[in-house]
Each structure stands twice: as C-alpha cells, then as structure tokens.
Length: 189
Ligand SMILES: CC(C)(COP(=O)(O)OP(=O)(O)OC[C@H]1O[C@@H](n2cnc3c(N)ncnc32)[C@H](O)[C@@H]1OP(=O)(O)O)[C@@H](O)C(=O)NCCC(=O)NCCS
Image (cartoon, rainbow, N blue to C red; front, side, top):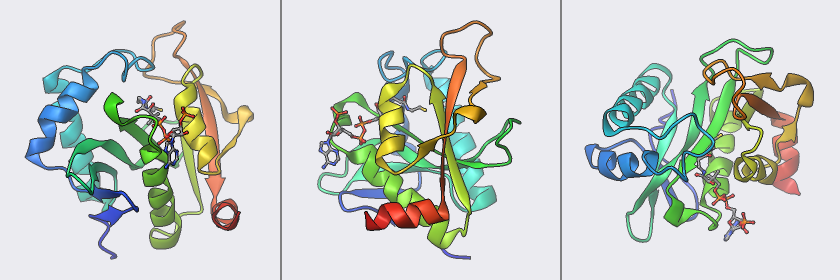
C-alpha cells in the first residue's frame, strides 16, 4: 500500500500527530469561536480522546485527519483530512473531507490548500470515486472551502446530524460532493 502518512502542499506538511500537538490542539478545540458551529468546545481530555480516535483511523485505513504543520516555521495549525462517515445517512457509506484550523491561521488559504492535497490523495492514491463534505447550515466559512475546492451542493442529501440536539440551529447539515471526474475538471480550470 502507498505510504500516506505524510503528504505535502506548497506551504504545509500534512503529517502524523505528535504528542506535542496536544497543547495547541487543545487550545484550538477549547476556543469558542473555532467551535461555534459545533455543539460545544472540547475539554483537554476530550481533545486527547479525539487525537486517539484520529490515530486509530490512520491505523485502520492508512489515511485520516492529518495534522497540519506550516513548513516555514513548524507551527501546528490544525487538521485537514479524510475520514469514514461513522453514521448512516442517505449518502453513506462515504468518505468525508474535513478541516479545523486555529483562528490565527484563518484567512490565509491554508484549509483550501491542504484540502486540494487531500482530494489528490483520495482520487489518485486511494482510488476513491467520490468524496463528500458536510457542515451545519450557518457555517459559511466551511462551505466556502467546499466551493473553493470544486465541491457541489447536493441539496437533496441535506440531513439532520444525528449527534446534534433536536431543534438546535446546528442540527441541519448541508451536503457537498465531488467525484473523480469533477475533480479532474477542477484541476484543469
Ligand atoms: C472552516 C475554516 C477551516 C476555513 O478557514 P479559512 O482560512 O477561511 O479557509 P481557506 O483556507 O479556504 O482560506 C480562505 C480565505 O483565505 C484568503 N486567502 C489569503 N491568502 C490566500 C491564498 N494564498 N490562497 C487562498 N486563499 C487565500 C481568502 O481570500 C479567503 O478569505 P475570506 O474568507 O476572507 O474570503 C475555518 O474557518 C475553521 O477552522 N473554522 C472552525 C472549524 C470548522 O468550522 N470546521 C468545519 C467544520 S464542518
């Protein structure tokens, strides 16, 4: 199998998680602004458990949510990557692409840049036919990343996220998709 443990984009390493990532990642996941479209910020223990699940996904599938390290100064800035959707919906089974960056690194194009690398991995190395993405309806910054990497909204597949409380404004999720052909097309646009 191809070694997917480390990928790269022009400005970033997409690498495996290191123990030193816990402190900055816990700070990021405890930031109410970063987490405003999730049910709640995470405690340090919850963040450590999340890193454990991410490492488990890499161990099982060989790919996952890569830690992002800025090449020029080695800063840990968040994650971007691919993961199996763990709940059932009209669009599953599916592999989703997702991202979460510390606030200091927003507005610099890093999430989109890393996401391009992940789509390349999905279609060229993993041989997937399609990648999906979803986010709470009010999360416009995340939808902008989806659009920037050529994903298309599939309104017919919008859904209520099973992990979000009934009646919450964050329950309704929008579904975006990109297939291999559309990705090839977006690459050449
Ligand atoms: C979603 C999230 C990753 C988006 O981050 P982002 O930095 O806005 O996204 P991008 O990497 O695509 O950067 C795009 C922005 O960088 C700007 N930019 C600056 N330099 C750039 C460059 N070289 N290339 C591309 N864009 C650049 C763009 O103009 C754009 O700014 P704008 O939003 O003001 O128009 C970020 O808001 C986040 O971490 N949110 C919290 C977690 C979250 O909600 N995750 C998604 C859950 S589904």
